[in-house]
Image (cartoon, rainbow, N blue to C red):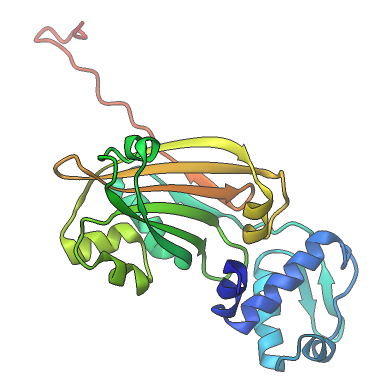
Length: 259
């Protein structure tokens, strides 16, 4: 079983149907202005109940792709979903809340021993072990993954493998909750990239399409790197929002700006 098949099998059937309809609309199989098959026809096509079809259509409608009218039908109104996930990043709490508001689907988890290059990247010694987790992150009501993430977690935490097996939320939150490893600093780098074939396949996107890569490094109160992640976000699915405030200008006793 491939990683993708495993991820699909873990998702509710209505999300899988919504996914396929979204893909077909994006590919032009159902053109803008055309009508989707009736609910009964979709039930037969996907071999699901009418309730499942209605839930799938609701998700596709909420993504801005279709318009539904009684006695008229379901019209395709756009090929590209209009909804995108917007993340405010003005503090560490904002960054951790984003992960808490979304769902993680673990595709693969392996234990790796660091060679020289990886040890330098993870700020550790050669031979040190880390847990590598590849996952998809999804938002409520949207069948398209927000991002594909490859994360590394220090294997020095006792029993961390078992904790990652039952992971439902953000890794950083688990480290804080289970081990008391409070995140004191997060370094983040964002760059524009293009999707590779495998990345596009997992993200239900176009190979070579534009994307953002966000690399984050999580440090505890002692300045120790305990988690590192690289998240690939397809274009038009995600936006960062940051507010920058200038501190009040300092003045001397005479009320003049200090040098």
